Image: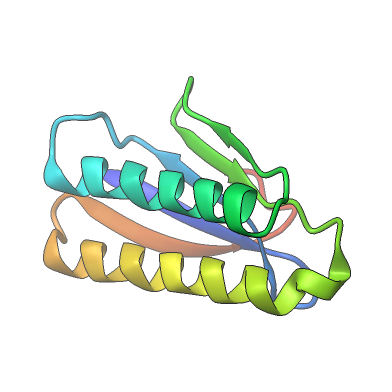
Length: 107
């Protein structure tokens, strides 16, 4: 079963998304990858930020919050992605679970 960890900073803003055990065979795993890619491209192309998406060992999306003036826009993109991931987990409960994990918790 795949897991998505939502890491939030002390202000409750999403700092990173981490996916583990997703493989690439099921619809939940593919959907998760698309959500991660959508977030990365929206932050990079629309907001001109530099998020980091790693796909070598699981999935990891690190959010670039270097421009504090864009926090509301970043929050809108990322909270929408999280809602999508939670809907995906709801539709595929045997394939995916989404967890909230405070920043600093090693996943």
